[in-house]
Length: 497
Image 1 (cartoon, rainbow, N blue to C red):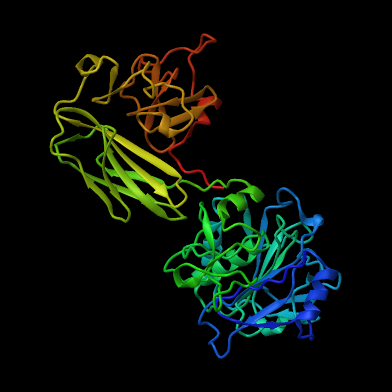
Image 2 (image 1 turned 180 degrees about the vertical axis):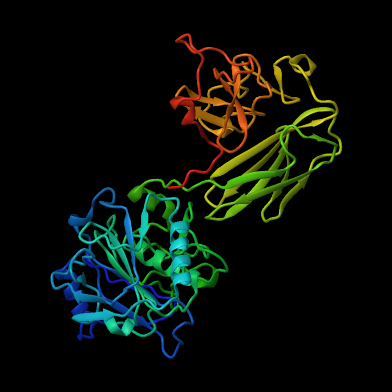
């Protein structure tokens, strides 16, 4: 069944297939080369070039040749056309970003060359960071290094839309399909957005997503919308209504529109909603966004404080911090969505050791927790000074000891498994640890104060620090600071790819 579908903010249909300017010619082209879409331009004159996104979504028939259950690669190449980009009309109807030169069946000229994207180096770097942010939840590789003949999706940025036969009101264009994706898809973002990083980024994200069967949406904070939004647009994980591109009460494929502003319609590939995150994850899988970096600047672990003491923290993330939570002894006391991330402990805290926790969340929900234990009143000198029989005394503070879930020496897989928020790993395994002072003999029996590589130490099980707290290894000799311990890793530290 032939599809002819056009998506626009507000536009009159002006079909373009080469120099032929008729709907009939487009229909014949779609029949001849199914699955790769039509070349349909949308234009509104005399709307200024930058008055809104005039983004083309170009559709074609179903094609069994592009029904792979998942993408054959995870590379998105941001090509800013250094030295110029030559694009030829694909005479076989198959767009191919791996050919030399690149080929596209949707361009309106036999051959065209786009000059270099004119943004500054700083703007380009910001665009790349934005794209990695937007696609952070997915297992994709955003690169501006040419993959050559390797399979990849390509976003070509630069030049004017007229150089490829499109209206000068066009900001971006992409082929599209109702099948899973178009292999080696080539989409375009034209040099009409100035230095507006968010517009460039959201246009690039929208165009490449169109070649993965995704439609326009009425969610203003999603890159797939035509609606304006003050901030970064990110793909949403939830059911979104299709639309935002209706003209005179009709969608681009003739669907009747309704709802607010008469801009909600049925989705072009069926149904009334789509979930962009679910569909993109089906292609690429989950990403591994790096968690925030969380530091408690004051007070320090073991510090003697008074009730109501201030807590200063630093929380940063290259993707953006969404919120920071503050807890004392496990009780949530405050949540901030913007810095500075400063808090005050309750005035009602009594004598004893108290655990202060700051939890940072990034925009994808990844978390990092930092904790310190502080003391109100007299510090402990031995476990018997602690009010709980299961606590032990380290550096003047009472902390959950061995045998308690999340306590000192418990096996751990992440900082969240430990009451201290510290999970340390060596060849011997991963264990919950507590901070200690090197050489001070603060660790209980069976533990030694092992250097953490950052100027401090942690009580690590089985390590002999020479103060009498450590124990011997199973081989009968003391465990030294050799290969196993030299490779110690702390989960509280951020790991970057």
